[in-house]
Image (cartoon, rainbow, N blue to C red):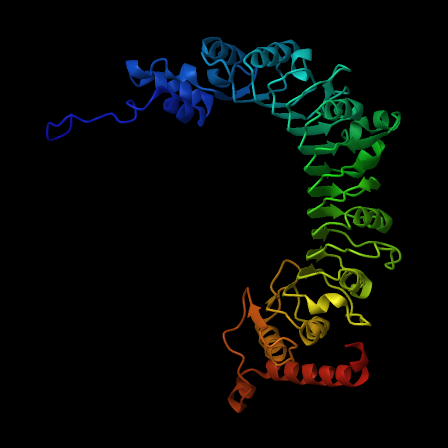
Length: 481
């Protein structure tokens, strides 16, 4: 009853049963069960939920909602004939026999999406590896503490309807993961995360024979690989990919394992964010993804040795390129990409400090198609030299976005003001080009007046040094532009 004596309508309880089931399935299972305390109408509504999310532990100091007995009780009272999503985090103390029993019970409920995380090694029942209703499967095992396989899989695997597979392995039995991957004939999305044992088990890893991570799928559309550390090369000696219909490829982590890409002709987007210690392995990767329309290359370490690598002769379909981190000695990687990407339209560069911009002759063909450029980091003289090259040769350039305040470099206000003033005065090959400044820039770029000379002497010194530098560059190195 309300304060005015009018009856309050319970609109939530009046909703159809299937709608209430959908609502309760969106929340953690323990909260869905607690709704049984609301009223008689809600006492058994939770039993119709079709999605479950549990975290189990053998620690008796934890809540009863985390006990294995509670999970069993919920599943025993579940009235749904088909489970859409089942997520469970199994703690270290959960016995392996209970894991097998729990997974088997979920499989009997015709589960569609199954997400299993275990802080220990785990054996999977045969019923999981032959489940016909599964469309998405995620298996995570953090087996750092026990010297055994992170997963044990029987040799026969057949998941006829599985389209998405996430496998996170921290261990040594890569062969089991390969059996699982090859047992999914209609697989479209694959995520593989790989890491080695901890330092205490390093001697054990050394005694094993590394395997080849070979992925050969005709239906695969998206592949994500993540390699955590250099010890992973003791688990896998190479990665061989034959994926004729792959559209999206992403690689993260340490590039310590050689890539052999046999087929990726349908690639749309490729992204690599990694630590690179050997330039030849980066070259192998770039050759494999050379057909991509969009490439994002983020390197976190400088590469040793010679920078004159044998990059692919042509990136024929490349329209969007993002480079971040190391760009080669004397910016060596940037000219190579420009010269070999005739259809490039969008360029983004965020670089660590490097040496002077190297000349590019003849002018790359992509300069006739380049539409947008984003340049991040630094307001040094060689940065202005590079931007002068872009502006003076890009005939259809629409926008040049400049951001000098980054994680690599935070210039002083006087440097920013001076840099912006010089940049805006450069000649532009495109009349429609707009220069945009993002980040923290000074509000004005007024010329130095007599009053400013008295209050800001450092700015005048910077101005004089800058002018002398440009005079030297324009006179002695004008042929480089």
